[in-house]
Image (cartoon, rainbow, N blue to C red; front, side, top):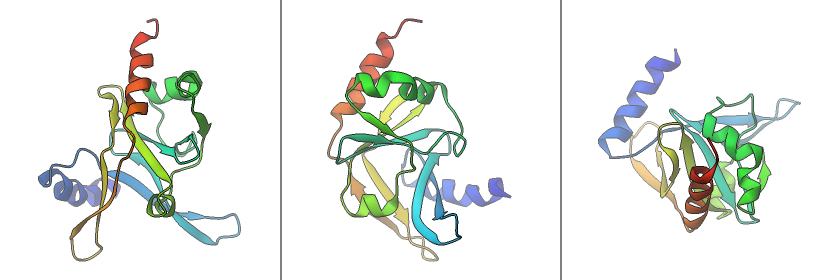
Length: 152
């Protein structure tokens, strides 16, 4: 099952000081054609990516676990920060083409945490390769500030 498959992944990244492991899947169109690798969520978090066109991308509801902080961002917090929501999973090709400008994860315990870098493990070899480093951390601060100012 998934729990037994995820343990080795967690072990690799935890020993390297990584903060989160992201779950991915190969996208498939309605006619069965395989598409890009989609980045869905973390093991204990939701991921949001700030794209180069100013949109905030995250996987659609129903394809990832909901979260309290995620629900706040989707229900208006993103717009309060000047970001337009795009509920499609961020993709590996967008990352590799330089379309990601920033990213953050959300969880009830950690609230909003910037993603500084994305790494990958090469299949079969276990080598860790850095794929991306963030250019923009200010959006994280803006969202966290607005989140903390919401009435209880």
